[in-house]
Image 1 (spheres, helix red, strand yellow):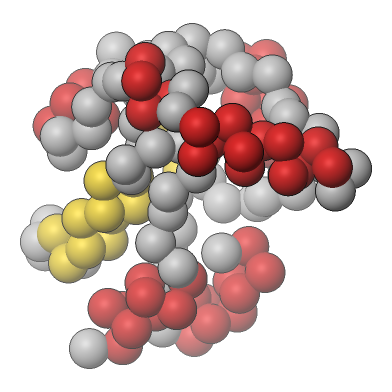
Image 2 (cartoon, one colour; image 1 turned 90 degrees about the vertical axis):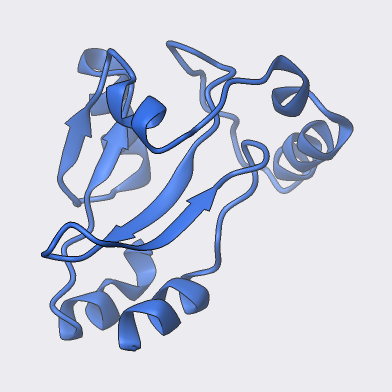
Length: 125
């Protein structure tokens, strides 16, 4: 999304990142990724719960995820150390100015996210 920020800006879309771990970990993630979107911290996981995002040990450590991590390491990418609830699944949500959820994408595992093209399609309608 960072690489296509101009397209989101053209649609007058504000991207906000919500995480459950603040402080040192959030600051380092922002620095490491170079993301400049606003970051909100939900340490109590209230939004995660309200949006139906689950916890799963098995989905976090399934072979698909481990293979993804191995591929990243082989490409020379580092795996970022995490803090907080490692088993918290994420998601992507598009909420309009009236509070209506236009896209609710609940990740099936830590590597699962909708494509930027899919999100832009939803926003273009």
